[in-house]
Length: 446
Ligand SMILES: [Zn+2]
Image (cartoon, rainbow, N blue to C red; front, side, top):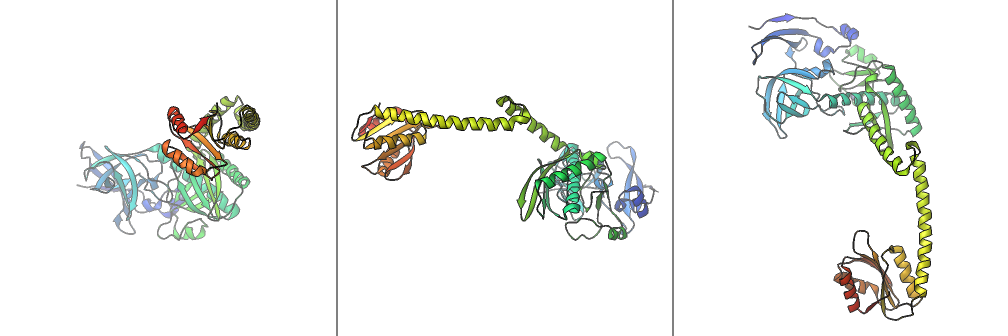
């Protein structure tokens, strides 16, 4: 026999006082005694009947409290879908993907919840295994994931509300990824303006004010000036952060701004006539801080500089590297002149190996040898960074494109250029290289 007892009836004025969700509470809340299938123990189960429509609703526990991380539910249906098993319960705390907020993960009894989405007003859990219909299961949310989503979502409202009231821009796109949150606004901002918003948002976080979510009545809604992405119909859920924002939203939020922890903007780019802002909130911001600290620490050790002076130290190193490069180029050119002065004037094909020379210097060497008539066709070889030989070949008498094609084919090479000069890489052993070049009439310049 099923017994019902009648509990409190919450009206809209109760909602105004309590801030509780009237869609669930406005109705007759029944408690039904039910025998537990496994233990045989009798337990009071809460059931909600909607007086207006006279139908039993599926309870969305995440709208009763965003802090429910464990619950029990009865399996109403379970069928095999494309991405796993699709399970519907009589009540759930799993938030389905929506309004920019990703779905919750966690477990239902022995199976893992991989995804959650809403279909025809029902919350469907996609799991990696089946459950028996009629079975009472314990649901457990991956709370770290969900709470971060709450921090990010409330942080996003805070920022969007502040930018909206200060600059009149609308949030026209919102994405919560695993790493960061992005928000698109339909107007341009400067970084300084964004820093002011960040400052203001963090002040509101430190003030630890309330974040209120609920379904106001039609009359109340008419009086409210709230942000909304589209024309909404039916019950409209409003999330309000007094002093910062009021917005239609279906997501889960923290109860007080202090729980957002912090808001940190990372970047801003121009996007579709407005801006796309990347930001981090709460735990994600703290984790990011640690990653950046570690990077900076490693850099500052390598540079022997204080972490906050690393950029200055890098600037110094780069200037030093430029000076060294210039000095090296000067002495290398001097070396080329010295080498050339020690060579005799020669005709025919010559080649020279300079393991430390880069492409630029090889080219210079070839040009100078040709100018000073140290050969009619000159091939200069260096060592390539990824293995093989870099080559530059020039001539005053023959077409270099034809010769490089021939040598490339013999020495697994690639490259090309003009009739006067070619460059590329040979991928061959040195013995093979010497042999092929000798066969083609090249004489090595010691
Ligand atoms: Zn929202």
